Picture 1 (cartoon, rainbow, N blue to C red):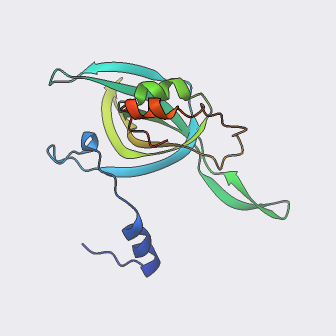
Picture 2: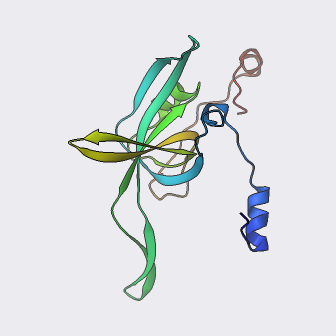
Picture 3: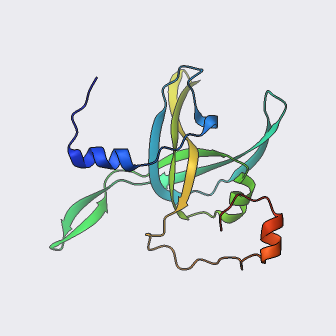
Length: 173
């Protein structure tokens, strides 16, 4: 199956780095993987859990939700404005990473974020009806600095050089 794309789209796709997260790969299960990017605001339920994997090793997962809205451009009082188009959609997210505990302490309800990850779908029976659910297994989480809701950002002071050399943190800053 081939798709014809304009040259500008091909350049954008070719220049975008692909991030492979082994925890998100489903080649061995035969499931299809759908990448998704969602922009929205964090909900109030943050749950940090320790999970014992089948190999006996412990993993940490941070579960949270994002409220996302669709917008459309519309003339309002003679000016082009973006207005909400449709209801708010809530998406459940899970972040599996050694930095999950650190993020748990930083994230707050209402924080504007952008998440990239894999969309997972499932279903269950409730009162004789099949209920479909959607979840995002988050690979990357970004603070949406373009949002007008951000008033300020506070950073910790830099580490002294001798402390930075002895720590084995992979953070480049």
